[in-house]
Every structure is written in structure tokens, then in C-alpha cells.
Image (cartoon, rainbow, N blue to C red; front, side):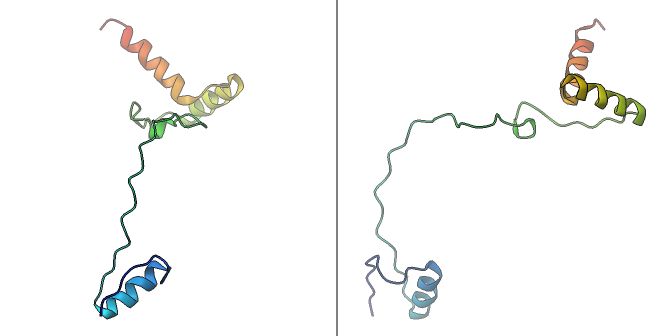
Length: 98
């Protein structure tokens, strides 16, 4: 028994595999025409987060609770972020002569 795929029967992929598997026949849908590659466009929306940016790596530090709370409060008042503060301090430290 030979089945020919017409594109109109057995719409569910699961049903196709189940029925065709029982019959011992594997029908393939006709090949679709290749789509032309669209030029790469920059996606609109939010900028890439640091955790998904390959230029950034996460690191952990231990800081006393009191220092952490005071830093968080001041950063909140100034609209800064902790990673920006730490990075600027580390860059300044690296510029100092050994």
C-alpha cells in the first residue's frame, strides 16, 4: 500500500506519525521553496542585559552588611548601579602604578 502526501490529510503531526508508523510507511511533505535570506536588522526593544552580553562576566565579592546597605542606599539616590560602581573603582585601581 503506497500513500501519497497531498497536504490535506492527517493535519496533526502526531496523528501522521502514529498512523503511518502502524502502516510501516513514512510519508514526507513536499519540499518547500527556499526562502531568501533577509538582511540582518537590529531588533527594536531593550538593550542586551549584562548577564547575556559576552563582554561581561559575573563575579562575587563579600562585603560587610553595613557597607552594602549604605552603598545600595546612595546608589538608589543617585540612580546608579552596583556593577557600574565596582567597575569604575576597579578601572581606577588598574590605572594606578604597581
